[in-house]
Image 1 (cartoon, helix red, strand yellow):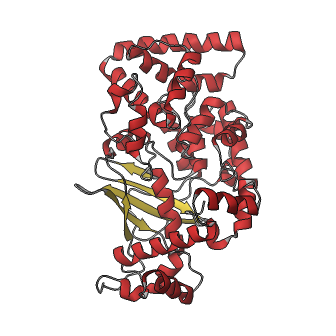
Image 2 (cartoon, rainbow, N blue to C red; image 1 turned 120 degrees about the vertical axis):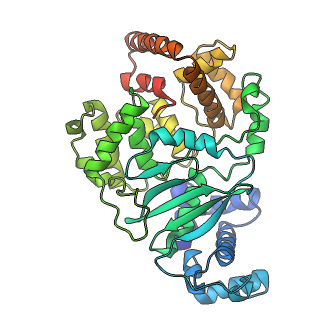
Length: 435
């Protein structure tokens, strides 16, 4: 939250209220576990981001101060003198050409190696939404909306370097820090992947899959958008879900009207207030899922901070499962991809069980859940490795995939009859690697 600018405008007391604790408790926790105050963490974040902008861009000093969250040029200069002993202008490595306001801003998004760009693109390519995003081996590009303002971003890998190159086309430079924070989560560059893989390598089941390839959890630009995707994707294939999502965006998404944007980006994702009133059944979406999206959109319209309040995994699961049309599987999937919860793992996922069986561990849901306890706190990454393995197996043996689909449909029916569970969420288990 601090990285996204929670203390640039708000106070420590307001941040504590969002977290559900007292101001005093929050300060004590920071002193005990971080060794400094929340305010100092925010100040350091602003300084480091400002230094990056000085090094990597030709933005004017005034705009850099605004982008980094400083209240004034005076406080900006003072912070640099106190921390580095030099003014911001003296910190610039060399003179740079003047920045044109219409030009995109290019920054670096560092990551810890290894990093599998190919795996991320393989996940995003079949799920890309026309007009909103493009995913290729060379780049990922999408339209964005922040504080009601439209823009676009492009992210590319750089051969031989431990960073992704980011281009940002957004009119408000004050939002650069927030945009970069979202992209860090979306591309999962902040995780210590070596620690994740060392943990998962201790599992005999997962060890053959790891191979230190740097598999990441694909995040999301916007939690509401991802949640809608998850609901639309219940009980259907990737192709069918993508077709339906394209219809929703084409019908309700506003045109992207910004200068300098890539030609392939033409729309932005529909507003929650629009989808709250939309009749999605007219586009072919089944009524139960249409109602689920409408209800979620209404919640976001009334409380834009709905997803921000999910500060722990249990809190997120409880809040999401309280909504109609969302069960534990969908809630964990949203937490995993939209909320960057590293320990989220969709319970009872058929693809995960199938992958375990292919690897020689034939277990039921309860046994798999117990087995996954050994993968904490990185179960989301374990899920990605197992989903990747299952997808590879299904591609190699398409005849087995067809047979598995028939068996899965029988399993769904049996669960509904014997346990009286929600069909939407049970069926969601069958497309865990799809939506």
